[in-house]
View 1 (cartoon, helix red, strand yellow):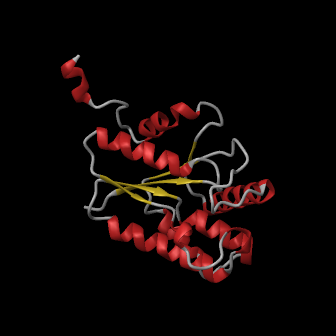
View 2: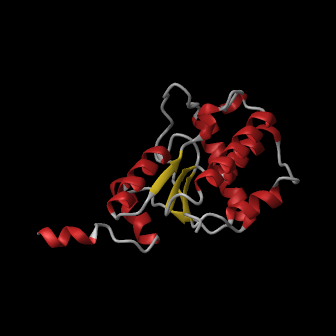
Length: 187
């Protein structure tokens, strides 16, 4: 049985990585086996951010898919730091649309059980890799929203407010409890 994949999507610097770890911890507390597909762009041997190339974005997109395939049969849940549509948004921003890739992107988007869009709530901060240009951050966010609209992809969008409750909202969207039922046995 293939795992259910949940992907946090959105531009850089919005907190996707933190949310991935928080959701994975919440899922583990519910006795689900879970693993993470960490952001593959950080491992890319080619330029990323505003200096990226078509080749770099192809590497990132295909590495993302390969990692998702690798984990698919080993866990109940896979939490992904990005989805193929994020990777494609950066490719579009850098090198333009790639019509030959879009049927695959559309197909692969259907393999996610839930796509969770994380809103921009603050400018990006430098972490050793991340681009800190607000214009670039917002351009990626707009491109991502445009692609999601064109592809007709269902997305669960988090509200700009209430960051502390975001994991609970995602658990609710998955129809999962906020707390493990076993906790009531010891109270």
